[in-house]
Structure formats: C-alpha cells, structure tokens
Image (cartoon, rainbow, N blue to C red; front, side, top):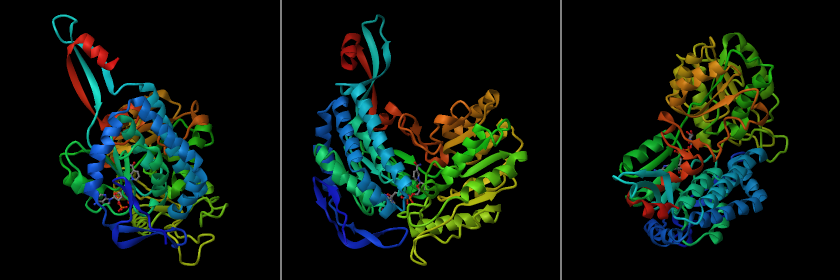
Length: 511
Ligand code: NAP
C-alpha cells in the first residue's frame, strides 16, 4: 500500500508510528496510508523561517507571481491524473473533481496575474501619500511589507486542491513560506500537488505535512500566521491554543437563499433560484462551505418551489462516481456520514419531509453495505425564525430546508442574521427597492451577498462558487475570517506599516 510521505525540511519524510488508512468513500477500499506522526516539525519550521523566508525575500511580487503561474500550469498538465485521484479518494464525481481542481488552477492564475501587476517591487503602497508636516516636504505613507515567519495552512477535507492552492497563492505572492496541512481523509490529491509543485519552487517555500497535525501548533511562534478551514470545534481549540497568533478562520456556515415576492418561479430569475438550490444540494454531495442550507420562499409560492426542486432532484443518480451516469457520489468519510445523518434526524424533529426521507438510498455500482452514501433530503419548516435545528446546526451534506415568509425584505434579512454569521447568502429579485432594503440589513451578517436577477442570470456561477477576486469568509459562526478578494487576500500575510519622513523618499519607496 502506498504510504503518503510528507515534504518537510527539504526532503520526503515517511514519519513513523501507527498508520491510518485513506479509503475510497464509495467502496471503502483502502487507497493509501499515512503515518500518525514521527516527523521533525521543529526542523520544518526552522527551514521555512531561514531558507524559505530568504528565498522569497529575494523575489519581487512579479517574480513570485511567476512562480504561482508555474503552479497553475502544472495543474492544467496533470488535470486528468488529479481528477482520477479525487474520484478515488474524495468520492467526487468527475464534475465535482473538476470543480475542485479547476478552481485551484483559476485561483493560482488570478494571483499570478496580480503578482505581475504589482510588479518589480517588494513593498506595497496603501493609499495616497499624506502631508503630515507643516509643508509638503514632511509626508506620511502607509505600506504593506511581507511578514517574516511561517504561514501554517490547515485545510478541510472537501477541497483538497482548491483549499490548498487558494491559501498558497496568497501567501506566496505576499512573500511568506508555507507549511500546508491538508485534511487526512482526502489527502491523496494534496499530496500529489506537493509532488508536482516541489521541483518548481525555491527551497523551503512550500512544505506539506500529510497526516494528523500532531504537535504542529506547538511550533507556531510570534510572527507566524495560521489560516484554518474546518469545523468550529477545531477552530475554537486553535483560538485557545494560539491566543497571540494572527489567525484566519473559515468555519461552519448556515448560508441562506431568499426568493423575493416579485419573482415568478417560471421566470428566468425563478429558474436561477431553483438551479442554485439544487446545485448546492447535489454538487460535492452538499459538502461545500458555501452551500445553501436554508431557503425562504413567499408563502404562496412555497408548494410550487417544493415541487420544482423535488422534480429536479429526482433526476440525479447516486452511487459510485466512477460510473458515468452517477451525478451524486458518497460523502467523504464514515464520520461525515454519521454527522449528516444526525443532522437530518435533528431537522426531522422540527420540520416536515418533502423529498428523500432521511437520506436512505441504494447506491449504484457499489458492493452491498459499502460506501458513505446519503441521498438528497429536502425539508420544510413552518416557522423560519423559530426552528433551532435549521438556524443553529450546519448539516454538511445534500440537505436543504425551505420555509415560508410574507415577502418582507427586513424579515428576509433577519432570517440571514438568524444564522449568526455566514459565508454567503443569496436573494433573487428584480425589485431594486426590495434588494436595497435587504442588502443594507443583511450585509453585516454575510461575507458575500449574491444578488440573483434577470440581468445576470445568464452568466451566473451561483452563490456556491468562491471567486478569487471577491473575499471569502464571514462573520460570527463562519469564523470571522477573510481570504482571497484579489489584493485583500495578501494582507493577512503582510504587515501594514505607517512611514513618516521626507515625502520624496517615501515616494521612491513605493514608486
Ligand atoms: P475539522 O475536523 O475541523 O478538520 C479541519 C482540519 O483541521 C483538518 O486538516 C484536520 O486534520 C485539522 N485538525 C484537526 N484537529 C487539529 C488539531 N488539533 N490541530 C491542528 N489541526 C487539526 O473539519 P472537517 O471535518 O475537515 O471539515 C468540515 C467542516 O469544515 C464543516 O463544518 C465546514 O463547514 C467547514 N468548512 C468550512 C469552509 C470555509 O471556507 N469556511 C470550507 C470547507 C469546510 P485531520 O484531517 O488530520 O484531522
């Protein structure tokens, strides 16, 4: 069986101790193993702080952008191989695997272009020069400088390529060396990325720990940063263990979608709404941090919305993603399956079933009794605001719940707020007054608001797609973090410094 080595301190480390199996979630066949630990993490941090940091400090933004462009190109070249690994270890359908892998390449390309745009410089100006003295000779200028330390990246199981690369792209262009830790259960894709990237990058710039974190956090020191994506319980543990470290947290999110009263379900906007809800329930088996979990529909349209979503869900075949006709694979792990089932049971106590029962399913092309399968489940709540299982627990699977409302924009925004902070939520309307009322009240509770309308329907990627040019992250329950967003994504890895002095010197520093 293949043992996935970690790439640390300039070499491949097999580690030691008990081995953990990585399985194909459709068949439960073992596809690889990882060691429980036994890596020299102190050496890895020292290597990043010395060799990696020096290598990056010697490069301009444009040169770092070129490195990142090389990584994107490599992913393109290895696309089919990576897709096969994502199917085997992630339970991804081909389409799900492409979403992850192409998302990684697109994000790297975006940051490669940004590096090129920032040019042959190592300091970034922040805002205009400011006169702080009696005359224009004495000036002030804010700048961003690369932080000196290690960027530790901890990723969730659902996007082993995209999650790894979005964090990596920002850190590298900003100038920080990275120690990346993918989730163990789906590490096959990330491990292959480390193998592909290693020859393309200067020494010490990227290291990857494959397997459990072990004592990883014990080595984090002042000046380092930690970017985490995963569950809120792990996030809480990180906050406690690293009170003085710059942390970015992307955690649970109860994203919502709202149909405004002006929209007819048979219109283009109505169709966009239905397509987005169904896509988010089925793509990656609903294992997207951005997926729509809660749906608000005007009371008089609720029954029709339920019927339309049911009809679409019924066309999806569930089973082994190696079969071409299968459009929904398994969830990633046995533990996820248990969590999703518990979440459905909790919802079932407070809501009515519309489609899919409790997720029971007979998957296609799978040995009997094997695989981590759960079918799409649509529920219906009577009172959106008074349904704790709906508003307090993220079910990380193909599950969504619809609820009626009177059509009021303020109520819709209060429903968004009821999730206590989300990554993204969406509203579908062509009524600009309704949208303005909704956005003003809902924006404090969401990292991103997606506004579906007839003008954009034909070119919309849907709310579930994270774009490198827009920030990803959300307040409250979602962790309070912020990633991506073009140049904003670099700032986590940089220090803003206010310079005061001779205005002409300041100008020469930032160009
Ligand atoms: P998780 O259990 O919190 O794991 C996330 C990562 O943390 C994994 O790499 C895990 O490693 C690592 N980890 C666990 N214990 C650790 C420790 N003591 N020290 C350092 N690292 C540790 O979450 P998950 O089950 O993989 O992911 C599911 C959750 O992630 C969902 O709730 C979802 O909402 C959230 N998520 C959020 C986003 C977002 O962008 N906001 C994106 C995707 C997922 P091991 O795998 O080795 O245990």
